[in-house]
Image (cartoon, rainbow, N blue to C red; front, side, top):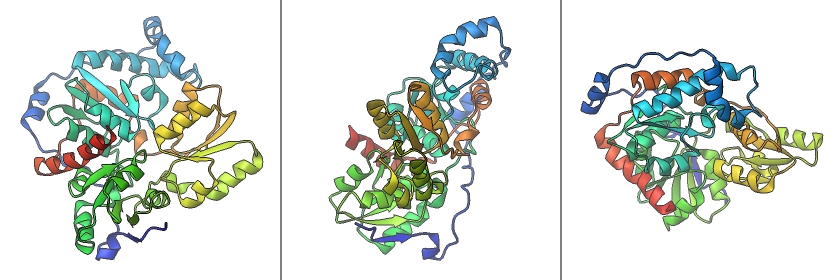
Length: 373
């Protein structure tokens, strides 16, 4: 059914939110202890026969998407990072939107937001390096309050996360008293602290229906809200947020691909506008899209999502020809091999969350994970 209503900051007398501010880091005893640890010396970053031998097996994973000319520039960083992980007792979590040299060559755990949230609860290492955007690092910290969580560039934000604040959620609750609130995991800890439960695109419908309520507030992605509304009888009240990557796709683009090749298969992420989803052969979350490609092995495919995800799928399944309408996430691309290396050398850019917020935010994330498991 159509969504029951859609709201934004202007509906409460506030101007639209701009880019999210970089969260202030409050010193903690743990942060102070980490700061006291020595900064490690910069390793050699020369391309040598030793580096070539040590990284040859990793290059095989990405040969289909990284040229032999590029690899000698990346391999010294890959070798150094993998060695530093052992030295620092660190684990690297990487989202599917990270570039292939990160996702396939240095990540210990890779996946979509739900997979990373679940796997974050199982991490044994003392340090987590989050190769993703800031809300993902916050989620890892919520689930590992005693561990050090680093993000290589704290400016790696998200248009969805910056579209809503905890104060906005409180105003929504005042306008719709008693209506449960579901937050997409693409939100700040401040927002997660004000909602009943979180969700990802993998489980959004399941989470909404688990509340057994006739009406649910679903925020902040208006397009995912519309997709969920089309799959359930629950009335959905939405927020005017959008992913700056997925909202740029259009139905006209998809029709042009079909006109050029009627046999092409098109799959899309539910953060896309409805006219895009109407033209797709399959709509699903990041994890569901990847599973669809693995199962179907289409001859020619268009993936309507972030560009690096298509690269990562092509690296794994080089027999599938993937046409890439390349919309890059500028926030994900702030994470690079050089700043990951720097993060491990210096232990800077630690993620901290105010305990008064963290306890409440943790509950909403854990409710989602416990529902899934």
